[in-house]
Length: 137
Image 1 (cartoon, rainbow, N blue to C red):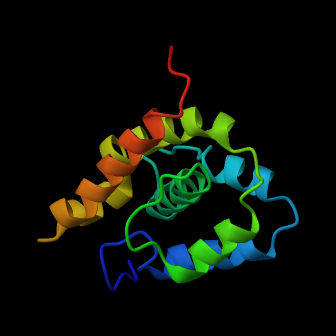
Image 2 (image 1 turned 120 degrees about the vertical axis):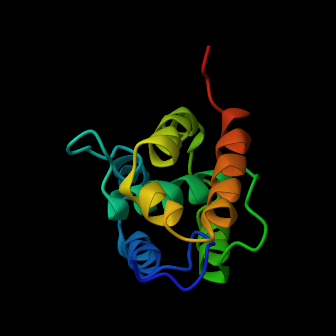
Image 3 (image 1 turned 90 degrees about the horizontal axis):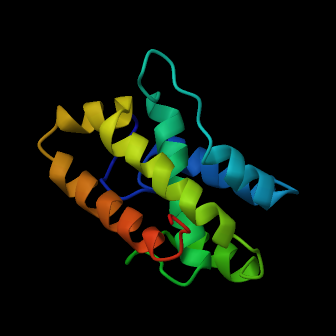
């Protein structure tokens, strides 16, 4: 999996995603695409699930509800892009994170480790924070 920790940006996939975010000319479209993963065989592939969590973290941070200990490069990027209107993506992030937590290869991989709860709990909290901004009515 290329992970050295349980935080969102402690994987090779997440850092590659962050590099792509930093390089894009259309951050809105990039975030929306990351939050719209396609599923194969009734399960969300691990890398796509990681992209969902990364994008959700960025959306939450822009909305003023960042995770504690967010990667410094993400904080810097968010500060430079705080004017993005990502509130419409909150609902999408909530639904995509549900897939990550229930129907993803990423969740399954973490479930095989002793650190599943350490990985899962912050993702659940992230989803709850984003629900405050989502129009789920």
